[in-house]
Structure formats: C-alpha cells, structure tokens
Length: 394
Image (tube, rainbow, N blue to C red; front, side, top):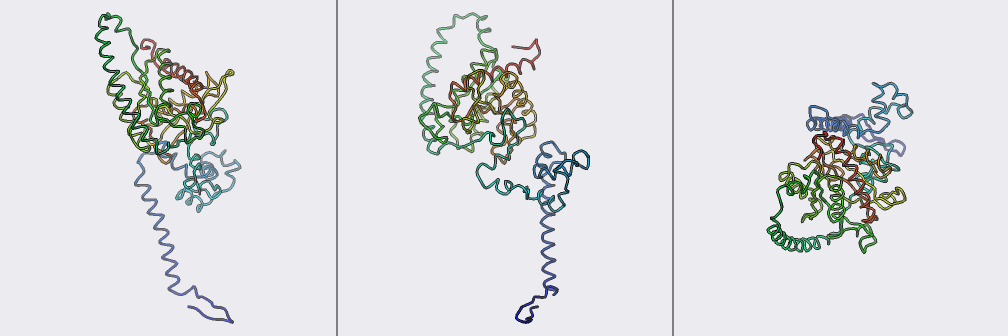
C-alpha cells in the first residue's frame, strides 16, 4: 500500500500481497536448486570413479577444496588458502555454476577463445610447460575440402595402377623359398594413422600464417610414415594409414575410428594405436634444442570421455617418462581433455594402448619432426620390450 508523506512516497512491505510474493520467490529458488541436485544424482553412476570425482572437484576453487579436505587432513587446513571458510553460499554457488567468484576466467571461459585452454588438465608437465603451452586444435580453411576430394580421386587412380603392377610382380616372384617368406617381415605391432591428416607445417608450404598450415598432400602423414620406418629399424613392425577422410572437421574422429576398427579386425598382432597430429602452437612452444639440434616437441593427449581412460594415461605417462630419460625436454607432458574441450574420446576407448600424439607445431619443419620420430620410436621400443616377456620378444 502506497502513502505520501511530506513529498515522499512510501511502500508498505508488510502487506499480505508483498509477503506472498517474497515467499513464492524463495520457494521457487529452492525448487530450482532441488531439481538441479536431483538431475545431477540421476545422471551420476552409483559407484564413484576417479573421473566422476574429478568432474565434481573441478567445480570448486582451490580455497574451497582445501577447506573441505582439511576436515580429513588437518595439515591442509593450516595452509594459507584454506585459512578462511568459504561459506555455504559460495560452496553451493561454485557447485551449481562452476564459477569461482575470485577467478574472472571462470566467468568467461566458455565465451572467449583461448580461455578454454585452462580447462585442459596438465597431468604431467614437461620442462617449461604451463597453460600457455597446452596443445591447441584448430580446423583448416573451409575451401580445403574441395582440394581433399580432388586429391583423393588422384590417389585412387594411382592405387589401382600400383595394385596392377604389384600383382604382376608377385606372379614373377613365385620363385622365393618358404624360409624366405617366413623371415621376410616382422609382425605389425603398431598402427599409425592421422585423423586430422591435412595438418601441415609452414616451412614446408608457401604459407606464412598458422591458418594456412594445411595441405592435402604435404602434411602430417609424412611424419607418420617416417615413424613407421623408424620403428621397423628397431624391430617393431608398423602399419601406417596415410589416407585422408572425406568428412567434415567435427566428424573426422568418427571416420578414423572406422579405419582403426577395420585394422584391428584384419590384424590381431596390432598392439599400439597412434593417432599422429600437429599442434597449432607457435615455434617457441613446440621446439627444443638437444645436443645442438632442433627437435619438434611431443605432447600426449588423453581423452577422459570413456570409462577406461586411466589405462591410456598410464601408457602416456610411461612414454613421457622414457622420453624424458632419453631426450630431456623433448616431451611437453601428458594432458587430459574432456568432452567439453572437443571430441574427448579420440578413439582411445578401442584399446588401452591407444595414444594421441602431437608432434611439433605449425612452425616446425619435416627435418625437426623426423628427428622427433626417431626419438619417439626409440622410447616406444624400450617401453614395449620392457613390458614383453623375454621369450615373446619379436
């Protein structure tokens, strides 16, 4: 009810209508929180895996986590960041919105390019690595699809001609003995493929901008072929799939998944599956000098959007550790990415020995990446032969 008093208008907040409005607002807010909580409980699994715990704790700031854990671990409550209790209002706010009031990045992370990098988890950091060094994925120009289609037609014609020649040569070479056939080749243990096969390197092209580091012919597949040869030299058979995919950028992993599944069906000996990529970071983040020579740095990306990602991470950790022993500073480390940061699965659910490996960046050359493939092959060989019993080594 409104009243005028000496030129001022007053509003009576104690009327039944106003009180009813406030009660409705409070109850409405409570219902929203309850429904949000019920929805989260329905979506959650009955057993809490480490991935689930990670998703929950990722919503809280450092101060809130330290305060909560301090109840069980007294030492943590003595730390400076846990000195003050965050309060229940802040606790529920962080849980419901994933926003830390003291960190502006959490307000803008999903809206501004580059802020999503802070969502990538650095599991193991290599020398000089921080969040500015996190591997970046960027799509190629849209007009590149036409070139890919034309190039694929040329490759199919060449393949048909090569198959005809190969059949003729096989007919002429039937003189070989059974012993030579058995000892001709070691079983393939590694399958190398390239989901983003057009990723290339500026020094090898006539482009000078990062968005021009894509090519349907001169690209990351050459690095994969070199890695296959380096593995063969060390006694590990490798099969390299260097063909492209006629698919949109956001459907590339679906296309490459079919390739991996087909390879697994045809060859039971395949043990490791490596998806080779090129990072979009610039030279200072992707290059290191070892014994006076420049190497393209390596990064291992683990997708957490499947139940058994921890097994993939174990292999990535082993590879990082071995590279760090043999070539200090070459590995940038191990990085986790969830569904929120892209594909999040990266075909790694197909095998516990699946790896997504970033080799170099847009400013590296083939010479630098080839030095890296030699190092990568050596590290994988040592990891493999250490894990295989002596009587089964091949």
